[in-house]
Length: 482
Image (tube, rainbow, N blue to C red; front, side, top):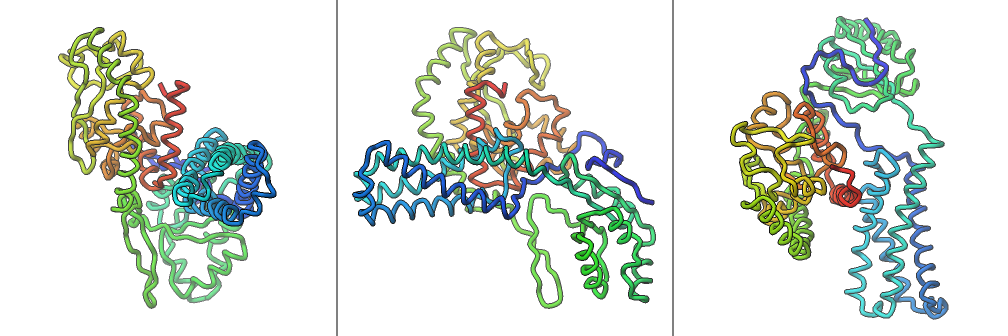
């Protein structure tokens, strides 16, 4: 009756590939870790301030007597810490390694530059100290990133992640299906308990009143589980006794209603009298406010980038024309937001007749259709730069799921559940899937790629966008993504 799945992911469910494997949720910090990060950041700010004064040989006595300047700087540091808290830097981590933590920390530091910059504009009295402030901001950015990476390495070395022990109990068909829907890590363990007499056993216990005699509760406690998931609701009169027993044995109790699975929406629980109500609501990335923020973010970076890169774009266009003739740009129909199609722009890297006889063909490593110059453009992702024009037009975003051709979208819709959810936002030039996977992928990887795209939709924040953009830039410079 009881089966043990020691490695978290249940491969016996018989789901046809490709399938979407839920990504693990961001690593949640313990209370002591959050306090340590906050204290570390405060120390870094203070040290950066004193170091900037020392490097610029500023008279610290005279500086200390400028109460208005000191208060303004302390206020700016407090605002930065509040911004970090709002971005979740003290609650969770998206990084799976120290290097990922470095990218995330530096992205947070860049966003934290906004308050000091505004202070320089709004408070003319700070103008004499602009050099000190600039140095302090730079030192803070480096110090914050270094301290967080150091704390991450120490945590991984001395405080290893504790694997979860999860018991899933309930009706057999739902117990079989539930593990494949959980966000599991590699060392998590699952104990499945398919119970054919689940309701009958509850009725018997309700008559006798001794919840400790429930077989699945006894098995869960004996297995030393920390989370007990039930696929069915419990009678209200038994809940207080079962909760006390679970608490005494160190178990958390939760209900996993398979018919209520949040996909492209969140669920908010509210109590109305004696009834628990579930209110569906849009994901944060799908709200009007997020759309405005993302659009401002896109234009603020894309327009200056196009101006600065215009000589490079012109040089590349000329080189393509001399190497393999015209057209210079390659236009291709892709599926965008809400399923609307648009023409994506790229520098042409293949022969003009690359698909004349084969029809739509998935790009692969070692393409023979690529031109001499195109091989170098693709290696450095320079062929993607014209998509900045798509961003200005509003057809794409800097960050988001990569758009696919209608031919493949129709195929993937039929193969992979939830595939259309990636069209809830504008497609991106880069995205969470692109920085976690190789650029050249086989179509069979569509399930894993979709899992990364859905992770991005479900956990979107401006901080996550900044992290993705920073890591993309680093991979471009160090040539890690080709």
